[in-house]
Amino acid sequence: MPYIRFFLFALVCAVGGPALAQTEREVIGGDLFIAGSGSPGDVQATRDLFAAGGSLTVAGEVAQDAHFAGFDIDVETDVADDVYAAGASVTVRANVGEDLTAAGFSVRLADAGEVAGNARLTGASVVVDGPVRGALLASGGEVVLNSEIGGDVRIFAGDLRFGSGARIAGDLRYAAPEEVDIPASVIDPARVRFERTERWEGVERATREWRGPEYPAFPGTSAILGALVVTIGFFVVLAAVALAIWPARIEALRQEALARPGRALLGGVLGLAVIFGLAPIAVMTILGIPLLPVILLALLAIWILGYALGVYILALRVWIGLGGSEPTMPGRLAVFAAGILIVALLNVIPFVGWVINFTLVLFGIGALAMPIFGALFSPRKQGAEPE
Image 1 (cartoon, one colour):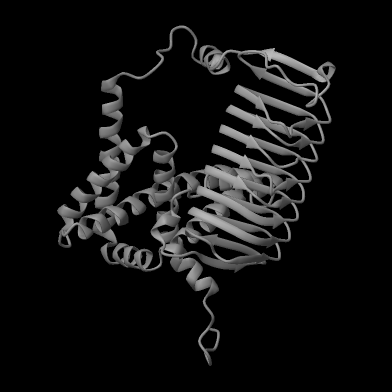
Image 2 (spheres, rainbow, N blue to C red):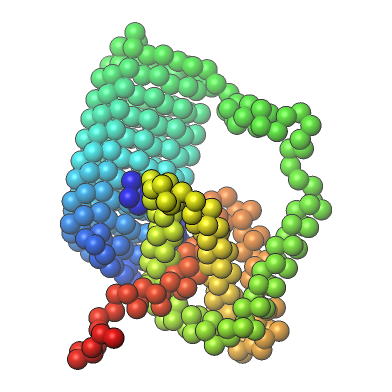
């Protein structure tokens, strides 16, 4: 898959869009990239669509695949091929020409939507109100089926319910804590297979097998605090070295990213896609295989630098927004250290904390990449001769 589609966009910024007053879009090689919040209007994508934002509603038509990531995603776009979506809340109200893959806290295929192929849905709450012509795989704390399914159905659920519109043409296999009374109007009981499972049973079994009896379940408080201190110290030293060597360059990157946050976000997506894309390309070529460790190290380095720059830009922006003056070198390091501490502590918030931290990674990578993409895609001045 040329863009490592779902793997990449499951990681895309889910709350980067709220910083933008409106959506921004860019077409590259026929693919349409959208970032921001709200509705970008009627979308007409001649190839693939990539959309990321906070609260995003996308309508229109996509000729090939569509990828969505954000906090609140509402898909109203008719897609000829596959749809991939990840977010806190994902609602699909459109026709999907092939398969649908969606993950989130709340996932719903509305009655206005239809999937011509297979649907794979996972979330704390999964509701299927629209028809699926192929097979259905659903996993969630609560799964509600209230539509026609043309193929086999496999469900993992803590609470499983069937609405009056539920119909299953294939076989049903479901795993739940208790057996569910399924009406014969939904499926012939002879085609139903039930597997009893406890909530968290699989997680506990996997944990025991991985760590063994001697491994502690959780690190101690001292270990966590020690790791936090080492992490903050590492990033502060990194920032001190960078500010001492390239103060003007870092300031220019900061100002450019703040002036064009949408482009910085898209630049982070594209920059990360380029690095991720190099790995499978290297594996597919004989000469490129020895370069794979270098590519992976480059990815790690870019990730760290992007995270540091993203936190630095945000921390100074918040400091100045609260009335602080432009700090001196020691002041910048202190503000940066406070920023690292705060965003690290946000990781204790399920899903949202991880999303905020990854948003900062993408924003920082985009800030680093903006001058490169600007040089590649900016038109030459009229009358300028190539050297």
